[in-house]
Image (cartoon, rainbow, N blue to C red):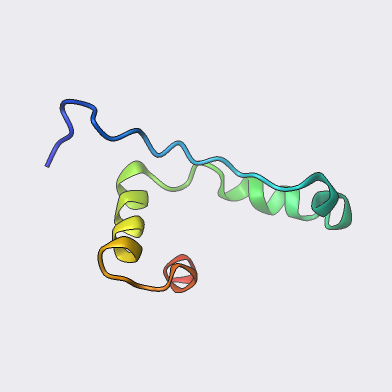
Length: 64
């Protein structure tokens, strides 16, 4: 079903990390930047549905 009325907001995900964590583990910056922008809106909606509708564990959905 298409959201032609733009009822649902876009899934504009962003990578966030605390400065103190990044200072402690500076290698995380490259890792996190490498995954930025990979998921499409459709993929994000599907992952959210697995958690919200299928009641799957969020950690397992993310891992899969």
